[in-house]
Length: 298
Ligand SMILES: [Zn+2]
Image (spheres, protein in one colour):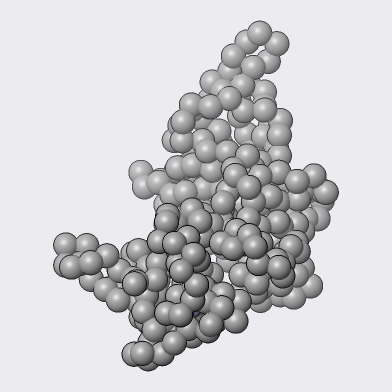
């Protein structure tokens, strides 16, 4: 039986074999053997992704993980162990939602903003993403006695987006605490790719955007989402494309923003994430103020 999910040593998070294949073809993953089993806490045998680099047209079967050493056995607690009880095997072959975890996270903010681009290399704001997998509560086996339920800290927008976009978490049940108020990931992330109503709420607003320069003399660029959103003032409805003003010198100063430069005045779009409260008036603006880590693009 092929294994669908594993921990990627290169990305330091759990990914499906399908994602591994996709990331390999995008050049984001290099080593087909850099995976570990996540079937149980104590099973960490090395896994290899089969069909790691193959194009979909070349797949005989979809990509899957298998033990790197042929015949190596999973720990006895691991559902992939041959001798593991049959009832847990049934849960495994059901659907992948049974694998989804419910996480509980705290956002580490300062003056309403993130203070860095990535928390993986710094320790003061909590644990690195590589240890997150040990902190979630899993619903694979509800009878398991020693279920862990601790809050992991998230200190960067990048990590928050990683958790949201990972297939491993159930976004409707996974919560993030912002200033001690918990909110589900599903609610926290507000897509701007459909014509939607905005309120003065703290959210991660994301969608396709472009960046341009109004005048070459200006000392700023404008990031503009491609879809219009709307809000209401009194009885008036204001429809606008949300935009973000960003100073040219700040793009130079912040490594996580430098890549924006290549999109300026092109028609290419990128995914832009803004964390904060929209400014709603005759326009719709996301103001960075001095929180340059409240913006992320991909
Ligand atoms: Zn295992």
